[in-house]
Image 1: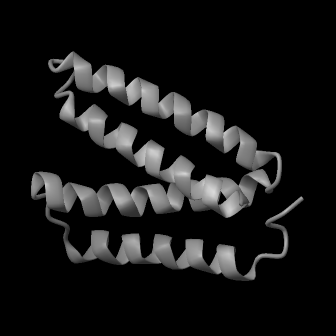
Image 2: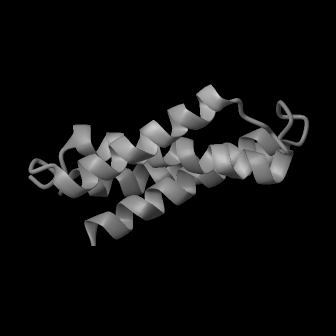
Image 3: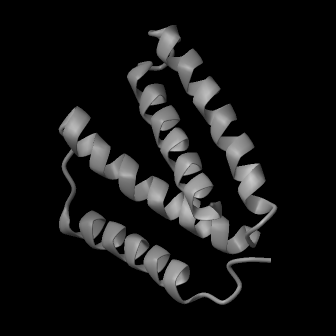
Length: 109
């Protein structure tokens, strides 16, 4: 259940970040307002996750997966391109997140 909530926190945070980009510097204020809503939801869900998981591991998973998903979405939505260094860096973040998730013994408190 904790991992499901963490995944939901990641998805809402990614949604918020993408909406913030779509707000075009708050020129489209409704996207910016929706972004604030989703950041708040993500924070509330993440707070619940932290009751059951160590903060260091939870934050590593949350931020690592968030970076990877926002990067992937930016390629699809805004046709952003990455050089080899960005691609390798993102793969390292995902690899580290998977390593922490699968092998860490300090995940749950």
